[in-house]
Image 1: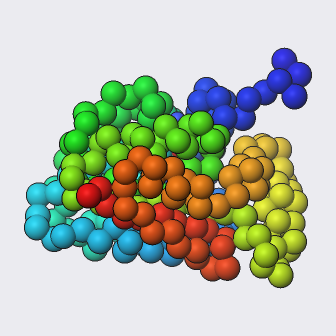
Image 2: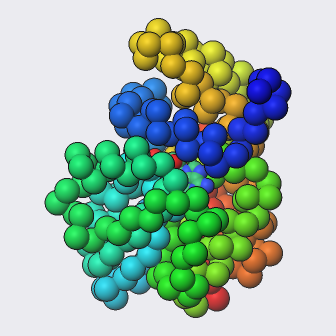
Length: 242
Ligand SMILES: C[S@@+](CC[C@H](N)C(=O)[O-])C[C@H]1O[C@@H](n2cnc3c(N)ncnc32)[C@H](O)[C@@H]1O
């Protein structure tokens, strides 16, 4: 297959990337983002704004190694269970074996493409997703917006955040140089020539920001707020189902 023929939004291609980099994912994402990813996960949970009535259950879509769960359980100890959905078995195995054993009774896992996973309609008090948007193209984002509306109960809340292209920021050229030049170099030098994290820059600039996704969620019937974080280096959408 020639390089031009590769569809970087094909779920099989995306799964391959995350299966290969699951062991190094947390270290790389924390270290190379200089702690920003952790801060953005916390802010994504803050935007979820759950009612505190107890016994709440919901989904963490594109859950990875469950990086957001400590933030969620700290802010909302009354959340009773989360169903984590991720296409990469590597990411989830690592999550359960090494990182979240003490929380495992509160976490169910669906290892599947989120669009093929047949999740039950109107079953969620909340939907959370951190850094799971950029590997979707326009059609898939629209599908995700419709899925979000379908899964939430009336009154259910959602919050998504994603690394974004900070258009208009005077330091954008430096930021892009970091994403597309320095990160791939660090990966090649320190991770035995791997080129998986190098894809992140391409996915981020193709994604742009979460504004279009906000519109798609509105068109799916949800109340939506859009928010920029740190000059637009990340953008988030949050809201509820009326
Ligand atoms: C950048 S990671 C984010 C992980 C985690 N949520 C975090 O905060 O770091 C993106 C995750 O989305 C998952 N993913 C990508 N496409 C998917 C799909 N179609 N269905 C389910 N999971 C998918 C990948 O396997 C990966 O674990």
